[in-house]
Image 1 (tube, rainbow, N blue to C red):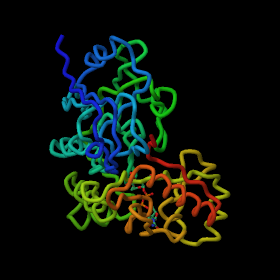
Image 2 (image 1 turned 90 degrees about the horizontal axis):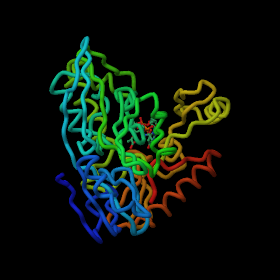
Image 3 (image 1 turned 45 degrees about the vertical axis):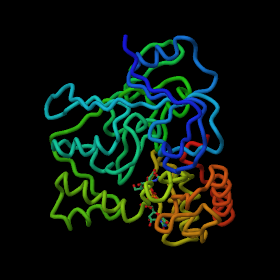
Image 4 (image 1 turned 60 degrees about the vertical axis):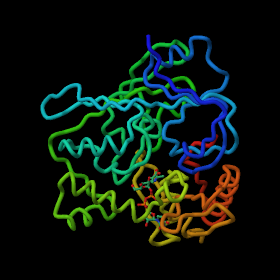
Length: 339
Ligand code: EPU
């Protein structure tokens, strides 16, 4: 059997993480299939390994002395169609936004609000990526994975993935146990525009109405005005999660801080606060210390202003958390995976 892996030793990770920190990894393997992984692990599983997909939601705070696995396969293949619903198999190494563009080009609905999210398709289920009122879980039908302990390929149905706000079983029970090799997404030929979030409707109307192409363009435009391009300014998108707190506590805060945004949470007794607003109102938007800063246009995003180490970023992040705790009594957790 042909193994399609590419191996690197003592490799600089700067071009493999969107924060652009220059930490090193002892060993990195790019793989295509579960067979590649089976052969790679045939002689034993290394003591320390993890998946590094696009590196868009990860912060290396030190050199990594283990094995990093990077999915490389990039196939997108429709596998079934019924009653206007199309099931598409997507290899883990596909750029997420290439998948969204692929769907929009074919007039298939379901992913357009998730336009321009950096990262690979195989990483999408891990934190259940989301934006503008949609989450990956709304489209993911099942996840294909390689089980490191057994060497078998397995399939998890969406209902088994433990999806929640920036949550899944892959961050918990299955962490360090499986490698996602592909996802299957369910797309629709029937228009189903979701325009309820923020400026989306206005931006879509300005482009002439709710076509797939207009929605994609509107979302891309909104993201470009708020979020820094990692190719220009190192960052990992939202550094923190929006905190979910008891509804009563959220309402008490809102009474004290009129104008504070409040969103419904999955649990009706809870509410989601906007961490970006909290950081902003703690006076930190645009604040920088040395080579790290809070982005000027979206306070939820921390940026590498050039040459920062992962250690500098995390030290700065701790200060941001402390400032929000001091001002509002709210703890904000990191969304980014800290290694
Ligand atoms: N806000 C401020 N100041 C700021 C940032 C935000 O006042 O500096 C306010 C906004 O005015 C708005 C509210 O906070 O009232 C929410 O802001 P926004 O709509 O920009 O969204 P967010 O909650 O900050 C989340 C996601 C983003 C996603 C946007 C749009 C998380 C952790 N982040 O951000 O996802 O693009 O919604 O749906 O849930 C990511 O995960 O990397 C990411 C970029």
